[in-house]
Amino acid sequence: MMKLILSLTLIWMLSSTGGALECYGNSDRTVSCQPNEYCVASAATHSFGITRHRGCSPNCKKQTVSYNVGFWYFVQTDHCCNTDLCNNQDVPYPDVPKENGLQCFTCENPSSLVCDKTVQCVGIQDRCIRGIDGRGARFVRCVSKNVCEAGNTMGISNITCCKSSLCNSA
Image (cartoon, rainbow, N blue to C red; front, side, top):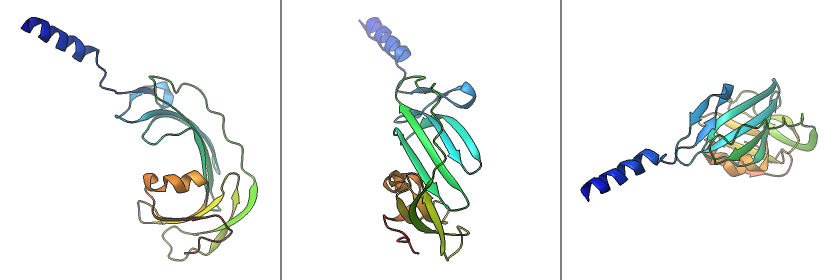
């Protein structure tokens, strides 16, 4: 009986994956995710060009996120999944965003105490935000609604988001 229990335990241990999800990483290598992470494939359009990323993410949703500080904009589309090697598709690059009429304050320099420059929001950026990022720099700019909703998980604290032009004065 003891041999049977030991054998069954050994078989269970060898067949158990422990919940680690395997995903494609950049350069098509595989990576093991941490527990509670998802596979992600993303594509970004930004001021300096386009980029793709594959890997693991703890807070992944199928969504597009966007922000803009005036001299630099960023739009990223994520596709998330939760089965092994499910992130092998190429996510389409988001279109270059067009101005949408909303204006927000931004900082010429994130370490500046004065954030009185204005930026024209583009694309899905429908909010102005004010907060502090994980390095202690001011986070003042145009963002999409989902950046406001996920701000704390992105390392932004003291967040204030609003919907009208220039409502994020520091």
